[in-house]
Image (cartoon, rainbow, N blue to C red; front, top):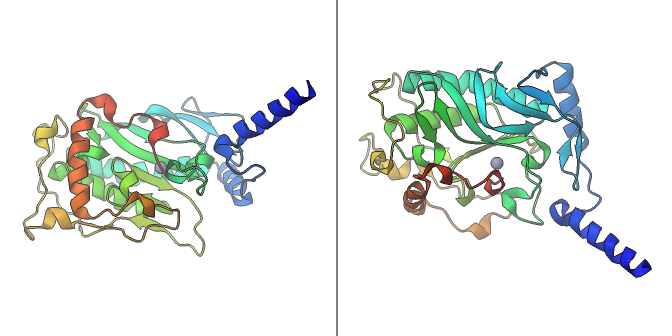
Length: 307
Ligand SMILES: [Zn+2]
């Protein structure tokens, strides 16, 4: 009996350590302080769309003091395809990004507002789903993955198809990517590494000395005004046949050179994933587009999301 108790305790510790990886680890104090400050400033107010939850503590350092269950942002004007669990600072930053970058860009490139966004949110795990690696900001409700969205007229856009999709999709996604880099401390888009081919990762990590990470480096300047006719004539995502290489005519290789390969992978241990030059990326993306053509395949689950 005593022996069984010992085994049970060992099993329990093993289970707790499963995602926790580092038994006894504690959340950095700045995380709780940032949440408290955000709440004190009323940057997020509880509502039917933002429901306060009990604190999440563990496994390991995972969790947050004051999580919110979010079903819509910006006073309910933009719904979330799947409800998100996030801490106050991330919700406030996301709302600002959607209001100041995403909505204006949607109106500019598609002629209508965004009605629904698909975000990945809280997930207790290592960065890029690696056990034993640095913990992902998703583990603290301090990160979100933008997978795609639905416009007010029903058209859909996914990052996996749109990043190298129609000119409007490419311009739109790059515009909101650049906007995100002004809002978050980490932003990773397709081309940054092999893990981020199908979403924009955004977080509020504190990298030290105010450093920010924004990858890939784009050789791109926004078109203004857009040379596109917004509205029904703009076919967004109806199938793989619409995916055309985007070349503004600047150079024959423009479509391949707009993403500068990010070879300086972070010390997070992404190196093993292999190099990721534009050529490789383009090839991989095509097959991914085909895979995503059947809607449900747009990211098997939130747990498959990375970083
Ligand atoms: Zn992420």
